[in-house]
Length: 263
Ligand code: SF4
Image (cartoon, rainbow, N blue to C red):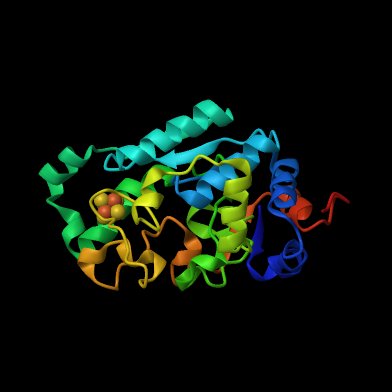
């Protein structure tokens, strides 16, 4: 095995800043073959990602974590995307239903510590069970979301998943995303048109006022200390250091040492 750190990705990230989302997705599928998957929570940017995957005819699965307390609109969006875009959506579920978890551990999401545990059980762990299957996970984080995503790298290491994270939409601005959605009539979670700027579980998500930050509707009942669920390593302080371990051959390919394939 060989170590790959965030610092090792500096030059590649510099190059990637000039690339389109389509080029970056093609790079990922060429580079990793069956060992790349996308992740989508069926929010707006995730829908755009799924549309690009479909339009480019890319054969990568889309992982969706069904926490058991998603909005029905989110599940319907997932089903429409799978049916109409022909992408393979793999639904990952927690080991306990919300009812079982509540019977055993109480209503966790009402306190900051409980929220962390609940998100870990219902979001992070279902994804973590896929660890080892993928060398690269494609997410739809964008810098325009603000907050901790202000400077999200296009390519980062994800130590908990021991994989790379690719964010091909990192540079996509709000007006560019709106234009893409309008041009291609992208399937959008209808809650976005009902005041929800971001969408998570139905227990912990509310609409936001026009003058509020985009993520103000997430864990509103807990105050400003709970802004992210932790499923994305780049949202977690210290989450993209120090390194991941991949085979020497894969590391050489990523860094362009053993192939002239580049974009
Ligand atoms: S968002 Fe709320 S309900 Fe969903 S996993 Fe996290 S704490 Fe639990």
